[in-house]
Image (cartoon, rainbow, N blue to C red):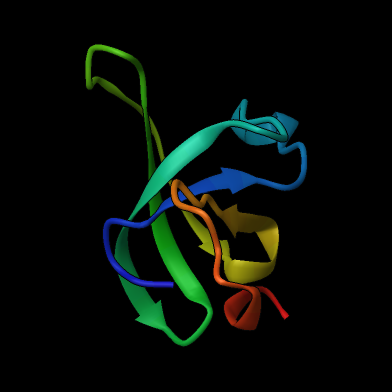
Length: 71
């Protein structure tokens, strides 16, 4: 994963008011597997900015994946 990738949460985080499926953007990588993710509304207003482990979210794909890449 890299800066500006779009990701979705894989788990609920009620203490942070974030829930599985919410979409965010990677805005910083602190170390391998540790990212700052920004969550914004449709008007571009940030409602959460959290440091997350890569295991807590998935990369969203907007293009068809080549079979070699998905294996």
